[in-house]
Amino acid sequence: MTKKILSIVLCAVLALSVFAGCGQSSTPAATQAPAAPAAPAATEAAPAAPEAAPAKDYTIAVMVKDSSTPFWRYLVSGAMEAGKDLGVNVVEYAPMEAQSLDEQTKQVEDAIQAGVDAICIAPVDSNGIVPAIEKANAAGIPVIAINTKANGGKIETFVGIDNEAAAENLAKYMVEQLNGEGKVVIIEGNPAGQTSVDRVAGFTNILSQNPGITLTVSQPGYFKRDEAMTIMENLIQKDPDIDAVLALNDEMALGSWQALDDAGLTEDVIVSGFDGAVEGCKAILAGKMVASMDQDAIGTGYEGVKAALTILEGGTVDEWIKIGGKVVSGDNAQDYLDNFAAHGFSE
Image (tube, rainbow, N blue to C red; front, side, top):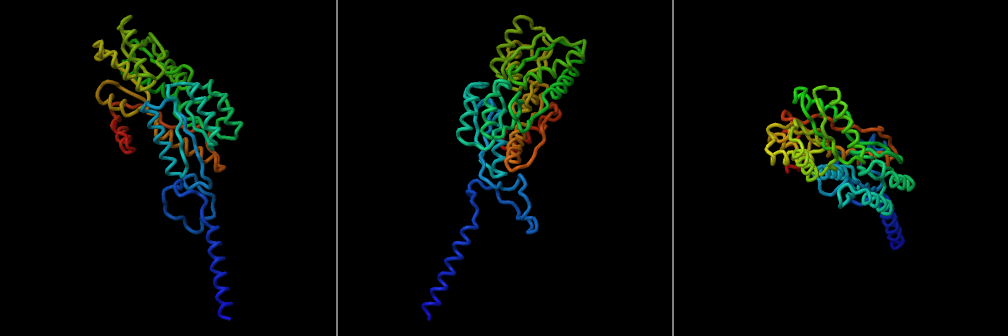
């Protein structure tokens, strides 16, 4: 009789152990979101918000235009921060050669092969990247455009600044600094990218409305500091009569300033950038640049990953998640530097 009772007890314990094991989470501990305060019992059955640990272990690819420019480091940092907060795996893809469409296209194909769940991409070429996006669409992988729009394929949302409107605001500020008169040079980015097209359009819209302003040259520097420096050196040799330089990013603004400084013209020419990045903000405070444009690179990366997770979890997002858009000047550059420092960026 005693042996029979003992046998029944052992069977009961074994059954309870198996039942408990079936109730464990299937999400690896390393991919879960950081601990948060427990929700009230009444809300436990509600659908999980994007900020909560996702129901599935997702991998989101974040694709930028190069692997070294500070702006893209900030954006990727924001994406990685979102990955930690939201409990998803974020993987970066970046061309070794800056602005390489061939490399970026190959990386989209690699990400599809790797089985990523979503792609956040800043297209190097807004038209050229379309076939790769269509391949991701065919594979059932949602695509989010970040920083730069794509001109085809199915894009779930665009996360970024309104480049044309922002460029108009920056151009207005620069015209004010010139008191409505002067000769202006525009250093463009990559003409194949919609970002560059929109910013140039915004600049020229405002410059054309001011009869005292003459646009003497608009030339692509492909978002590279050294190319912008070379362009300015050549322009100065041809005609040093320049009053302002409007560059489409901070890197090119600083390259332009260096050429002007070498020629002894920095007292006569004002320079603006477009990024609101750390070095640009420091250059404004140092008197090298007079203005830049806040793109909120960190926020763009964060919101891109957040939007991707929302879509993967069956939610909806706005067609355009707008971010940034304020002129950075001597009045507020320190505030932007303080924000970068809060995210671990001081250089």
